Length: 233
Length: 207
Image (cartoon, rainbow over all chains, first blue to last red; front, side):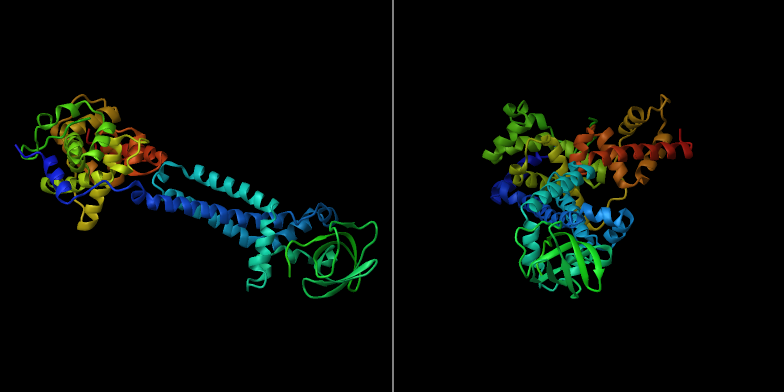
């Protein structure tokens, strides 16, 4: 009969002074992956809030004047591809982080992805309501070397004066018109009247705006609606 | 659960050596006791040694000395990780999980996997009858040998899942925790594994 191996094991535990490790020490990797997951959720939510900002930029008035076909074409050209890709990357990274946690294998792909998408959407919506996306855009992406067309593709949407969409920076304000430097640096005279819907409390020079209206001559534009462009120049 | 026949040199009479008061204690009580006093850990080793020995031999087919070395490391690891065990899974499942991971680490260290598995005839018959609904009452030695060859030739992941399900008699939930794979993957591995064996048995006209 062989000696009970348990005795050998207990002797080794005692002689090498082996003790049960602390829970914190044993689980640090697990905690780390949960933190990574939360981090991907927050990042994904920021990217998603940029997507919301881009989508909400399409005003019903534009839909009416341009028609669905044309606005769809413009949207395809100016969709926030960078933010969509980064948001998707955040969902995938979040999925991988959860799978690396201690019990990550227990959750199905559908469950983890749904939770990720839901979390990113809800948090992204909150960030948008709190205007965090605008602050982040202005603080981190303006004049930081990132191509504007990539970071703020909706700017391209407002370079279509012939289609009734003009955007840019206000240079001077007069009684019934304002001088605008378009996003493509072209100077424009924008006329407005009492019928123009103005969604800005107080128009000031230096402001970035979006104008829906019609082109009435060379570089002249009649405004139906004026509203702020979310990012600075 | 079927018992594997250990050779006389590795078998030892666990019950006689176990502390009487620990025989009836459940795993969770043993864990609490072992954390407080390493001597109490002996009851856990006694309870699981033979089961894990058979598990490693069935799955990975190391020789007896190697299995004992692996198990010694496994139990040391279990002792060190005692604080990591939580009640969300059965203690036995957690122990199997550690054993499997340690054995795979050992295989990686040696850079060579044993090329066969240890399968008792009675285990095999049991698997065949309980899981494959074979109508034939008796399966002769020659047929068993051929079926054993089919199982040995199977990809590891199918063989491992089938053994855990039908020989170790683990539930899908337990197998999920031992292999750390999603439950859906386990179910599909079991079904595909069974199909592979049945198809081979039919195509080779074994039974």
